Length: 399
Ligand code: UT7
Figure 1: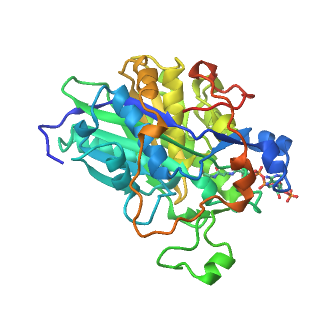
Figure 2: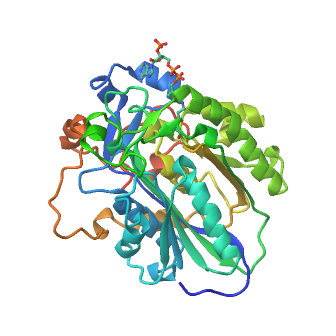
């Protein structure tokens, strides 16, 4: 990475997303755990989520979304100075997923590292990238949120396995000498929530062992009610702080792109900010909770489906394990028409993540998902089908 000139204003110039083709519906989950479509829809708003195929990883999905964002920005991979990957489901503990993404997208010169802030990771990554550019240390930064959560779920725990899905989203942030509207960024961390959403084993506190595996300690655990309370308490206040830092009031905001965890949480935030639901972009019905990927996937869909135009005031808000939360208030400046061009220019087959040598291949698919992943893929539909917040969607592929 070569340092560039003086401090600059920061804007989004590229955006992209990727969702694996296979769909896991509530009806599928009804056959796996004691749950019902009615319960899941009424308590969460989720109807279906995506499941990565055996050959896909967080790095491969993130690389597709990232390269699409670079193409949307009209840049080449080597224009990127820094790659920040937000994920709680990295390919490995080390190397970083960002290092794998860097090679897979054909970048030879960027600094690359991961950010661990769970579902707030994309917002934390955005703030990090913004600081690199504003300080003059970088000109173009790629920020990716990518998650492969379906391999970290206990398919006997109906409190968690119905919530999460796989996917990736990305933005390119670029420095500009033209002044832009003020940006407001707010980040918080409340360690009181440290064990409300957690993955107990595999770290230095509880290294992997026969016992940790047999006790299921490598799967996500969550205190749903406490997490829900934190989210509804914190999201509105974090969002309000970012809006105030931008010099706006909530009524000035054109579109809020919230972390897609639960429609009831989004409705509570709307109430807290005294805004109607049509100011919120919602796609939780089709993807479930994709953690750090949820805000950038929703952003790309919002822009590509015509919900965002230059001059619009946007707010990203997220919360997650830690407990972390974060919000960014910014004015949109890019041409939305570039999104579909960038999306169409990268096929998942273009991406090759380096494979380890001397490694006996393991089957990464949880046994509970084997049957779903063996069935034929749904037919691909185009983006014009995307209707924000629409409750019932046919299965569609975002490839
Ligand atoms: O990115 C951050 C990630 N985490 C979150 O966003 C989670 C935030 N929390 C939530 O979204 C909600 O708390 C949940 C959706 C997880 C649960 O909804 P809830 O309204 O808080 O339900 P609950 O935990 O109070 O459970 C109510 C009942 C219980 O049965 P009893 O004790 O009343 O007989 C649960 O056992 O619903 C039962 N239940 C289920 N029933 C059918 C819990 N999960 C399920 C399920 N299907 N999947």
